[in-house]
Length: 357
Image 1: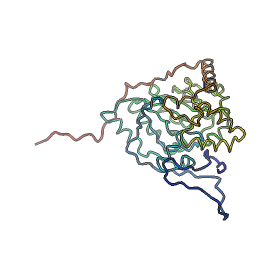
Image 2 (image 1 turned 90 degrees about the horizontal axis):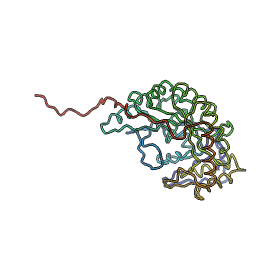
Image 3 (image 1 turned 135 degrees about the vertical axis):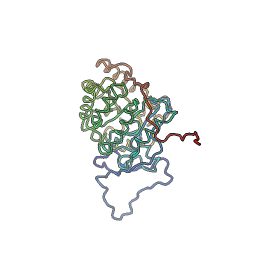
Image 4 (image 1 turned 30 degrees about the vertical axis):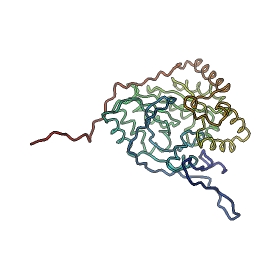
Protein backbone atom coordinates (compact mmCIF):
# COMPACT_ATOMS: atom_id res chain seq x y z
CA UNK A 1 0.00 0.00 0.00
CA UNK A 2 1.32 3.39 -0.99
CA UNK A 3 1.33 6.39 1.31
CA UNK A 4 -1.04 9.33 0.97
CA UNK A 5 -0.57 11.62 -2.05
CA UNK A 6 -1.10 15.31 -1.43
CA UNK A 7 -4.54 16.44 -2.51
CA UNK A 8 -5.79 12.93 -3.30
CA UNK A 9 -8.13 10.64 -1.43
CA UNK A 10 -7.29 7.16 -2.74
CA UNK A 11 -3.94 5.62 -1.93
CA UNK A 12 -3.68 3.06 -4.71
CA UNK A 13 -4.79 1.89 -8.15
CA UNK A 14 -6.74 -1.35 -7.67
CA UNK A 15 -7.95 -2.94 -10.92
CA UNK A 16 -11.59 -2.57 -11.86
CA UNK A 17 -13.78 -5.62 -11.49
CA UNK A 18 -14.05 -6.02 -15.27
CA UNK A 19 -10.28 -6.19 -15.85
CA UNK A 20 -9.15 -9.57 -17.12
CA UNK A 21 -5.49 -8.87 -16.40
CA UNK A 22 -4.07 -7.56 -13.13
CA UNK A 23 -0.63 -6.35 -12.15
CA UNK A 24 1.27 -7.20 -9.01
CA UNK A 25 4.35 -5.18 -8.12
CA UNK A 26 7.27 -7.14 -6.74
CA UNK A 27 10.66 -5.80 -5.66
CA UNK A 28 13.60 -7.43 -7.45
CA UNK A 29 16.25 -5.54 -5.50
CA UNK A 30 17.02 -3.09 -8.32
CA UNK A 31 16.67 0.67 -8.02
CA UNK A 32 13.09 1.90 -7.83
CA UNK A 33 11.96 5.46 -8.30
CA UNK A 34 10.18 7.06 -5.39
CA UNK A 35 6.44 7.28 -5.68
CA UNK A 36 5.32 10.78 -6.73
CA UNK A 37 3.93 13.03 -4.03
CA UNK A 38 1.68 14.76 -6.53
CA UNK A 39 -0.51 13.57 -9.40
CA UNK A 40 -1.73 15.88 -12.14
CA UNK A 41 -5.33 15.76 -13.32
CA UNK A 42 -5.92 14.65 -16.92
CA UNK A 43 -9.16 15.89 -18.51
CA UNK A 44 -10.61 14.55 -21.75
CA UNK A 45 -13.90 15.02 -23.63
CA UNK A 46 -16.23 12.04 -23.54
CA UNK A 47 -18.18 11.28 -26.72
CA UNK A 48 -21.82 10.69 -25.82
CA UNK A 49 -24.95 9.93 -27.81
CA UNK A 50 -27.30 10.72 -24.93
CA UNK A 51 -27.14 12.77 -21.75
CA UNK A 52 -30.07 11.71 -19.55
CA UNK A 53 -29.63 8.48 -17.55
CA UNK A 54 -32.71 6.57 -16.43
CA UNK A 55 -33.05 4.78 -13.11
CA UNK A 56 -35.63 2.24 -12.01
CA UNK A 57 -34.05 1.21 -8.71
CA UNK A 58 -36.72 0.88 -5.99
CA UNK A 59 -34.56 2.53 -3.33
CA UNK A 60 -33.39 5.67 -5.15
CA UNK A 61 -35.72 8.65 -5.14
CA UNK A 62 -35.31 9.88 -8.70
CA UNK A 63 -35.91 8.45 -12.16
CA UNK A 64 -33.68 10.72 -14.29
CA UNK A 65 -30.19 12.08 -13.82
CA UNK A 66 -27.43 13.84 -15.70
CA UNK A 67 -23.72 13.44 -15.01
CA UNK A 68 -21.87 16.38 -16.63
CA UNK A 69 -18.58 14.68 -15.76
CA UNK A 70 -17.22 11.17 -15.25
CA UNK A 71 -14.94 10.83 -12.26
CA UNK A 72 -14.57 13.48 -9.58
CA UNK A 73 -11.58 15.52 -8.49
CA UNK A 74 -12.95 15.99 -4.99
CA UNK A 75 -11.27 12.68 -4.15
CA UNK A 76 -13.66 11.54 -1.40
CA UNK A 77 -12.26 8.25 -0.14
CA UNK A 78 -15.71 6.77 0.48
CA UNK A 79 -17.37 7.76 -2.83
CA UNK A 80 -19.85 5.10 -3.94
CA UNK A 81 -19.42 6.23 -7.57
CA UNK A 82 -15.78 5.14 -7.80
CA UNK A 83 -16.60 1.70 -9.28
CA UNK A 84 -18.15 3.39 -12.35
CA UNK A 85 -14.63 4.05 -13.67
CA UNK A 86 -14.22 0.31 -14.13
CA UNK A 87 -16.57 0.53 -17.12
CA UNK A 88 -13.84 2.52 -18.90
CA UNK A 89 -11.10 0.06 -18.00
CA UNK A 90 -9.76 2.51 -15.42
CA UNK A 91 -9.12 2.10 -11.72
CA UNK A 92 -11.71 3.15 -9.13
CA UNK A 93 -8.71 4.35 -7.11
CA UNK A 94 -6.53 7.25 -8.15
CA UNK A 95 -7.79 7.13 -11.76
CA UNK A 96 -11.26 8.11 -10.56
CA UNK A 97 -9.98 11.43 -9.25
CA UNK A 98 -7.17 12.11 -11.76
CA UNK A 99 -8.52 10.76 -15.10
CA UNK A 100 -11.63 12.84 -15.68
CA UNK A 101 -14.05 13.19 -18.58
CA UNK A 102 -16.55 15.89 -19.49
CA UNK A 103 -19.63 15.87 -21.72
CA UNK A 104 -18.59 18.46 -24.26
CA UNK A 105 -21.94 18.53 -26.12
CA UNK A 106 -24.11 18.23 -23.03
CA UNK A 107 -26.37 21.19 -23.81
CA UNK A 108 -27.05 20.10 -27.42
CA UNK A 109 -27.71 16.53 -26.39
CA UNK A 110 -30.08 17.69 -23.67
CA UNK A 111 -32.01 19.92 -26.06
CA UNK A 112 -32.43 17.01 -28.47
CA UNK A 113 -33.67 14.64 -25.76
CA UNK A 114 -36.10 17.15 -24.27
CA UNK A 115 -37.47 17.85 -27.76
CA UNK A 116 -38.21 14.19 -28.45
CA UNK A 117 -41.98 13.63 -28.88
CA UNK A 118 -42.02 10.79 -26.34
CA UNK A 119 -40.18 12.68 -23.61
CA UNK A 120 -42.13 12.95 -20.34
CA UNK A 121 -41.09 15.64 -17.90
CA UNK A 122 -39.81 14.47 -14.51
CA UNK A 123 -37.25 16.16 -12.23
CA UNK A 124 -33.65 15.60 -13.30
CA UNK A 125 -30.99 14.96 -10.67
CA UNK A 126 -27.61 16.66 -11.06
CA UNK A 127 -25.02 15.11 -8.76
CA UNK A 128 -26.04 11.45 -8.67
CA UNK A 129 -22.75 9.90 -9.79
CA UNK A 130 -20.36 12.84 -9.95
CA UNK A 131 -20.32 16.29 -8.41
CA UNK A 132 -21.64 18.84 -10.93
CA UNK A 133 -19.64 21.59 -9.19
CA UNK A 134 -16.25 19.93 -8.86
CA UNK A 135 -13.22 22.15 -9.68
CA UNK A 136 -13.43 21.45 -13.45
CA UNK A 137 -16.76 23.24 -13.66
CA UNK A 138 -15.14 26.59 -12.97
CA UNK A 139 -13.57 26.65 -16.44
CA UNK A 140 -15.62 24.12 -18.45
CA UNK A 141 -19.09 25.31 -17.34
CA UNK A 142 -20.82 22.12 -18.49
CA UNK A 143 -23.23 22.21 -15.55
CA UNK A 144 -24.08 25.84 -16.23
CA UNK A 145 -24.85 25.04 -19.88
CA UNK A 146 -27.23 22.30 -18.71
CA UNK A 147 -28.98 24.69 -16.32
CA UNK A 148 -29.41 27.22 -19.13
CA UNK A 149 -31.27 24.64 -21.21
CA UNK A 150 -33.41 23.54 -18.27
CA UNK A 151 -34.31 27.15 -17.46
CA UNK A 152 -35.27 27.85 -21.07
CA UNK A 153 -37.54 24.79 -21.05
CA UNK A 154 -38.95 25.37 -17.55
CA UNK A 155 -37.70 21.93 -16.54
CA UNK A 156 -37.34 20.92 -12.85
CA UNK A 157 -33.94 19.96 -11.47
CA UNK A 158 -32.52 18.70 -8.18
CA UNK A 159 -28.86 19.44 -7.40
CA UNK A 160 -26.59 17.75 -4.87
CA UNK A 161 -23.07 19.09 -4.37
CA UNK A 162 -20.07 19.53 -2.11
CA UNK A 163 -18.93 22.51 -4.18
CA UNK A 164 -19.28 26.16 -3.21
CA UNK A 165 -19.09 27.02 -6.93
CA UNK A 166 -22.85 26.46 -7.15
CA UNK A 167 -23.28 30.03 -5.86
CA UNK A 168 -21.81 31.29 -9.15
CA UNK A 169 -25.02 30.19 -10.88
CA UNK A 170 -27.33 32.02 -8.49
CA UNK A 171 -28.77 34.01 -11.41
CA UNK A 172 -30.06 30.87 -13.14
CA UNK A 173 -31.05 29.12 -9.93
CA UNK A 174 -33.03 32.09 -8.65
CA UNK A 175 -35.04 32.19 -11.89
CA UNK A 176 -35.72 28.47 -11.67
CA UNK A 177 -36.72 28.87 -8.03
CA UNK A 178 -39.36 31.48 -8.84
CA UNK A 179 -41.30 28.76 -10.67
CA UNK A 180 -40.54 26.03 -8.11
CA UNK A 181 -38.19 24.27 -10.52
CA UNK A 182 -35.10 23.72 -8.38
CA UNK A 183 -33.72 22.77 -5.01
CA UNK A 184 -30.08 22.48 -3.99
CA UNK A 185 -28.79 20.04 -1.38
CA UNK A 186 -25.34 20.52 0.13
CA UNK A 187 -23.56 17.38 1.31
CA UNK A 188 -21.72 18.19 4.55
CA UNK A 189 -20.39 15.23 6.58
CA UNK A 190 -18.11 17.29 8.82
CA UNK A 191 -17.44 20.85 9.96
CA UNK A 192 -13.82 20.06 10.79
CA UNK A 193 -11.28 21.39 8.30
CA UNK A 194 -8.76 18.80 9.46
CA UNK A 195 -11.18 15.92 8.83
CA UNK A 196 -12.32 17.41 5.52
CA UNK A 197 -8.70 17.72 4.36
CA UNK A 198 -8.15 13.95 4.45
CA UNK A 199 -11.75 12.84 3.85
CA UNK A 200 -12.61 15.09 0.87
CA UNK A 201 -9.27 16.58 -0.23
CA UNK A 202 -10.42 18.86 -3.06
CA UNK A 203 -14.00 19.56 -2.04
CA UNK A 204 -14.94 23.03 -0.80
CA UNK A 205 -14.28 23.77 2.87
CA UNK A 206 -17.30 23.30 5.15
CA UNK A 207 -17.47 27.05 5.81
CA UNK A 208 -17.44 27.75 2.07
CA UNK A 209 -20.37 25.37 1.53
CA UNK A 210 -22.33 27.08 4.29
CA UNK A 211 -21.56 30.49 2.78
CA UNK A 212 -22.80 29.29 -0.63
CA UNK A 213 -25.90 27.87 1.05
CA UNK A 214 -26.65 31.25 2.61
CA UNK A 215 -26.13 33.06 -0.71
CA UNK A 216 -28.64 30.81 -2.47
CA UNK A 217 -31.14 30.96 0.37
CA UNK A 218 -30.99 34.77 0.39
CA UNK A 219 -31.73 34.70 -3.36
CA UNK A 220 -34.85 32.61 -2.79
CA UNK A 221 -33.41 29.25 -3.83
CA UNK A 222 -34.63 26.35 -1.65
CA UNK A 223 -31.57 24.77 -0.03
CA UNK A 224 -31.03 21.82 2.25
CA UNK A 225 -28.31 19.77 3.90
CA UNK A 226 -27.37 16.13 3.63
CA UNK A 227 -25.27 14.94 6.56
CA UNK A 228 -23.66 12.48 4.23
CA UNK A 229 -22.14 10.13 4.72
CA UNK A 230 -22.19 9.66 8.47
CA UNK A 231 -19.07 7.63 9.28
CA UNK A 232 -19.32 5.71 12.56
CA UNK A 233 -16.70 6.69 15.14
CA UNK A 234 -15.17 9.38 12.89
CA UNK A 235 -17.94 11.87 12.09
CA UNK A 236 -21.15 10.68 13.77
CA UNK A 237 -20.58 13.02 16.73
CA UNK A 238 -21.07 15.99 14.37
CA UNK A 239 -24.65 15.26 13.30
CA UNK A 240 -26.24 17.91 15.50
CA UNK A 241 -23.56 20.53 14.81
CA UNK A 242 -23.88 20.15 11.02
CA UNK A 243 -27.66 20.48 11.23
CA UNK A 244 -27.41 23.57 13.44
CA UNK A 245 -24.89 25.30 11.19
CA UNK A 246 -26.94 24.50 8.10
CA UNK A 247 -30.17 25.77 9.64
CA UNK A 248 -28.42 29.04 10.46
CA UNK A 249 -27.24 29.22 6.84
CA UNK A 250 -30.78 28.98 5.49
CA UNK A 251 -31.34 25.25 5.01
CA UNK A 252 -35.02 24.32 5.04
CA UNK A 253 -34.58 20.61 4.37
CA UNK A 254 -32.36 17.98 6.00
CA UNK A 255 -31.46 14.38 5.31
CA UNK A 256 -28.64 11.95 5.96
CA UNK A 257 -27.00 8.77 4.73
CA UNK A 258 -24.77 6.30 6.53
CA UNK A 259 -21.52 5.14 4.95
CA UNK A 260 -21.88 2.37 2.35
CA UNK A 261 -18.94 0.66 0.67
CA UNK A 262 -19.91 -1.05 -2.61
CA UNK A 263 -17.53 -3.06 -4.78
CA UNK A 264 -13.94 -1.76 -4.78
CA UNK A 265 -14.76 1.12 -2.41
CA UNK A 266 -14.56 -1.12 0.65
CA UNK A 267 -10.89 -1.94 0.02
CA UNK A 268 -10.01 1.66 -0.84
CA UNK A 269 -11.70 2.86 2.34
CA UNK A 270 -9.87 0.28 4.46
CA UNK A 271 -6.57 1.54 3.00
CA UNK A 272 -7.56 5.11 3.79
CA UNK A 273 -8.46 4.21 7.36
CA UNK A 274 -5.17 2.38 7.93
CA UNK A 275 -3.22 5.40 6.66
CA UNK A 276 -5.04 8.22 8.44
CA UNK A 277 -6.69 6.61 11.48
CA UNK A 278 -4.76 3.42 12.29
CA UNK A 279 -5.79 3.59 15.95
CA UNK A 280 -9.51 3.62 15.08
CA UNK A 281 -9.61 1.63 11.84
CA UNK A 282 -10.68 -1.67 13.39
CA UNK A 283 -13.36 0.02 15.49
CA UNK A 284 -14.81 1.88 12.50
CA UNK A 285 -15.06 -1.25 10.37
CA UNK A 286 -16.49 -3.26 13.25
CA UNK A 287 -19.38 -0.82 13.57
CA UNK A 288 -19.83 -0.58 9.78
CA UNK A 289 -20.08 -4.36 9.51
CA UNK A 290 -22.55 -4.53 12.39
CA UNK A 291 -24.83 -2.16 10.45
CA UNK A 292 -24.47 -4.11 7.18
CA UNK A 293 -25.28 -7.67 8.20
CA UNK A 294 -21.69 -8.44 9.25
CA UNK A 295 -20.39 -7.53 5.80
CA UNK A 296 -18.46 -4.50 4.61
CA UNK A 297 -21.44 -3.72 2.38
CA UNK A 298 -25.03 -4.84 1.94
CA UNK A 299 -25.76 -4.99 -1.83
CA UNK A 300 -29.44 -5.98 -1.59
CA UNK A 301 -32.20 -3.76 -2.94
CA UNK A 302 -34.42 -2.46 -0.19
CA UNK A 303 -31.72 -2.55 2.49
CA UNK A 304 -28.53 -1.39 0.74
CA UNK A 305 -29.36 2.30 1.29
CA UNK A 306 -30.38 1.83 4.93
CA UNK A 307 -28.14 0.69 7.74
CA UNK A 308 -29.58 -1.60 10.42
CA UNK A 309 -28.95 -2.48 14.03
CA UNK A 310 -28.65 -0.58 17.35
CA UNK A 311 -26.07 1.99 16.18
CA UNK A 312 -28.06 2.79 13.05
CA UNK A 313 -31.22 3.21 15.14
CA UNK A 314 -29.41 5.51 17.58
CA UNK A 315 -28.23 7.67 14.67
CA UNK A 316 -31.80 7.77 13.34
CA UNK A 317 -33.16 8.92 16.68
CA UNK A 318 -30.46 11.57 17.12
CA UNK A 319 -31.12 12.93 13.64
CA UNK A 320 -34.89 13.06 14.17
CA UNK A 321 -34.57 14.81 17.54
CA UNK A 322 -32.14 17.41 16.17
CA UNK A 323 -34.31 18.01 13.10
CA UNK A 324 -37.37 18.53 15.31
CA UNK A 325 -35.52 20.83 17.71
CA UNK A 326 -34.28 22.97 14.83
CA UNK A 327 -37.74 23.05 13.25
CA UNK A 328 -36.77 21.42 9.97
CA UNK A 329 -39.80 20.17 8.02
CA UNK A 330 -40.47 16.52 8.86
CA UNK A 331 -40.91 15.43 5.25
CA UNK A 332 -39.45 16.56 1.94
CA UNK A 333 -41.29 19.78 1.12
CA UNK A 334 -39.40 21.03 -1.92
CA UNK A 335 -41.79 19.51 -4.45
CA UNK A 336 -40.92 20.64 -7.95
CA UNK A 337 -43.26 21.84 -10.68
CA UNK A 338 -43.52 19.75 -13.88
CA UNK A 339 -46.54 21.33 -15.59
CA UNK A 340 -44.60 24.36 -16.88
CA UNK A 341 -42.31 22.29 -19.10
CA UNK A 342 -42.11 23.45 -22.70
CA UNK A 343 -39.98 21.37 -25.09
CA UNK A 344 -37.29 23.17 -27.09
CA UNK A 345 -37.96 23.71 -30.76
CA UNK A 346 -36.88 20.78 -32.90
CA UNK A 347 -34.32 22.11 -35.34
CA UNK A 348 -33.91 18.79 -37.16
CA UNK A 349 -37.46 17.53 -37.27
CA UNK A 350 -38.90 14.78 -39.44
CA UNK A 351 -39.00 15.58 -43.15
CA UNK A 352 -42.40 16.49 -44.51
CA UNK A 353 -44.22 13.75 -46.44
CA UNK A 354 -46.08 16.26 -48.58
CA UNK A 355 -45.37 16.31 -52.31
CA UNK A 356 -45.46 19.31 -54.57
CA UNK A 357 -46.16 19.20 -58.25
